[in-house]
Image (spheres, rainbow, N blue to C red):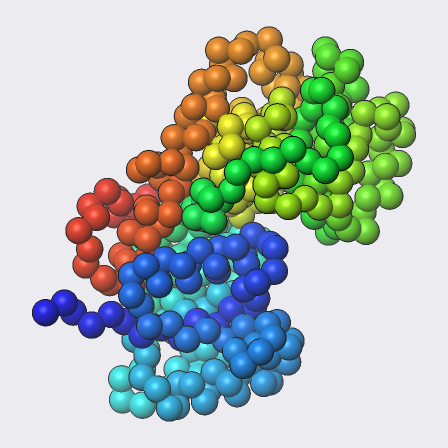
Length: 367
């Protein structure tokens, strides 16, 4: 008779929005479903019965009510902001309280781990770190934390992408272009779009264009940068695209370029790899766990416009390199690649202490 699956109460900031953390949450819930895990979800910013419409008091009370009336094996905390509250609420669960698990993504845990958070982290049973950089930053700020509780837990390409067939965009694209997909927010300037615009004026191919897919209040600023650099006619903004259109852009682009200096992981790199785009990223933080320089993509120092232009030119001058990067990137998100959903399910099983027949995943606490 198979062992009963664990019961999980997940406390998330949001699930359905189109952001990196939200996509991680959806992939994690899909993995739990694959494993047959009984999971209840509360979402701070969600709507409906499981959502709290941004009301933190209502969110905490809803979590307290669940813990007081149902037994859980794990209390999964999707954001460090909820961790101290979750640790306190766990005491409501009676004689056998659930173990606490934290998902640690990136910038939210790279700084600001004060005494209160160190106290809560010390009472957390498992910490899922999406990258080695995130793991190292946590241990630097909380040196008394048991390293064995931190599990490297990279994200995966969502299975929904495998059913997407690339389609031609509704608006025509330039014959040759590099592509970025990201929010255009002032607070997200670390994504490196300014550096790509500046690099565009340095590349050997004066007919190469730059397509930016995303919306936000920073578009006007980026348009000014393009005018200042004399490339305004070669920079194109698309406020959004359906998945099929986006897949088509990945397939057609000369390279996917997002030289972000503060990436916790970079799920969008996986999407580009899956649809055959060579990736250029910054040699910084979580991106280093996704892109291996010269193997699955090219890396350039953050904000180094000369290096970004050189990487773009290198791909144009060396078709064999381009083909090799595309093949290796695709392998990382296909079959038994590290960033496949299958491997993500295996990691999820290990995190929850579920024994599975999949022995392809290395030790959860490695490195």
